[in-house]
Every structure is written in structure tokens, then in C-alpha cells.
Image 1 (cartoon, rainbow, N blue to C red):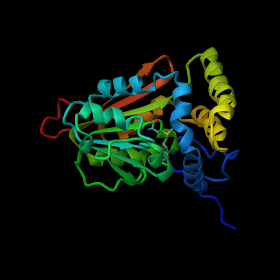
Image 2 (image 1 turned 180 degrees about the vertical axis):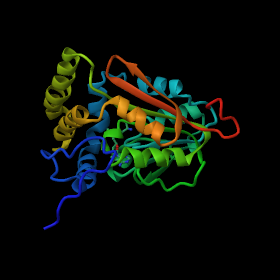
Image 3 (image 1 turned 30 degrees about the vertical axis):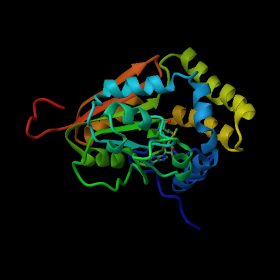
Image 4 (image 1 turned 180 degrees about the horizontal axis):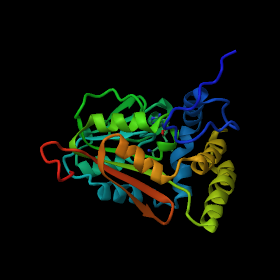
Length: 260
Ligand SMILES: C[S@@+](CC[C@H](N)C(=O)[O-])C[C@H]1O[C@@H](n2cnc3c(N)ncnc32)[C@H](O)[C@@H]1O
């Protein structure tokens, strides 16, 4: 019998054994869940965020420093809800690359044909060093096996002075906010998905989202792990108490005093 290995040093959370037995089973479990519910993702996201998702993602990318002409990598691109905003802000979809381990999610998106889509994971990026001006990641942080490994990869593929912006839902600070978010994501949304979804796994994946948010390491630890990966100008922008944007910059040795 195989003894389960301990979770990686910078795992975003301990294994969620209601869904998969050990850490080693997590990537395959997630890939299956995302593949199986991909056809419903955009519809449920639209309902969950009351149609505000595109505008919020766009504004977050602007706050993170995405500008016209930048070469962008969107990690955990899924159906492309962040990537489509990156295509518009960079001014040329050919400058944007999306990467995701779920082929089903990428196939379910409606992205410009000139944008590159690659199957892969944050922990092992198939790109050369110093390659991108900007790196985005929307709501995939909780699904990474080891944040330290992934953030070192982000630092490696960014050009000196390049910036990153990671979007994630984090626990509210007060008890009422936590209660509200829990009941919305774990109760209301899985119930509503029964009426609008075509796939069996859709309700489970949205319940999983809440459980992984609740189990996730606190924002301070994410910020410390970004700094430990050598990134600078590390900060968090918070909207409505739960929408976190982690922003950081790769050190520019030619200008060490001024990030970006
Ligand atoms: C909740 S979806 C987010 C999709 C999109 N970025 C958005 O803003 O709506 C999370 C995505 O992360 C992907 N993912 C899971 N594990 C990952 C990993 N280790 N590296 C990169 N992406 C991962 C999933 O396949 C899924 O498409």
C-alpha cells in the first residue's frame, strides 16, 4: 500500500478529503471536475457574480499594471474570462498566452483565434526565462500544489520589471461576512446550478470552491511566499472585503531602486 506523502511546503491548503483522499490525488480530481463542468462555467460565473465578472477582471488587470503592447501570460486561464480582458487591454490577442491543465475548460471558452492556448500547470511553465511583461491568474491559486514552486516559476518567466496580478476570493474578516459568503457559495449557488447546469459535476465544483476558500492559507502567507520567491513591490488590493488581488513585480537589476 502506498503511504501518502505529506503536503508540499507551500500547499495552499491541506487535502480536502471529502473530495479526494490524498494530496497526490488532487490534480487528477480537479482536472476531471473542471473538464466535466466546463460547459457550465461561464453561465454559473455570470449568475454568481451578477454579471460583474468581466468589468471586475478588467479593472483588476488595469490596477495590476497591464498596458497596451504588453506580452501577457494568463495562468489557470480556464474558459478565458481573464484572458479575454487581457487581449483587449494589450491591444493584440496574439500577445496573450493562456495556460491551464484542463483541456475541457479551454475548449469551452470563446477566445480570439490568434491567442495561444497551452495545456500545462503553474508549477512547471513551458516558457523561457524573462519572457512576459505581465502575468495574470484568476481564481486558480487554491488549485496549485505548491505556491512556492509556482511563484518561483512566475518570477522566472517574467521579464525584469514585469508585473503580476493574482485574483482570488479570500475569507471575509468579520463573522457575518464569512457566514454570508459560505451560505452563498456553498448553499445558494450549488442549489441554483441544479436549474441552470447541464453537467452533473457543476454543483460539486462550486461547493468545492467554498471549501477550498475556507481552508486556504491566509493572505499574509500568500504575500510572504511571493516575497520569498524574490518578487518585489508585493501588495494586496481588497474589494468588498473578499476579492483579493495580489500584485507584485520582478526586480529589475538595471533599476533596483524602482520596481516596474
Ligand atoms: C475557477 S477556474 C478560473 C478560470 C478563469 N481564470 C477565471 O477567472 O474565471 C480555475 C482554473 O484553474 C485551473 N487549474 C487547476 N489547477 C491548476 C494548476 N496547478 N495550474 C494552473 N491552473 C490550474 C483549472 O483547470 C481551472 O480552469
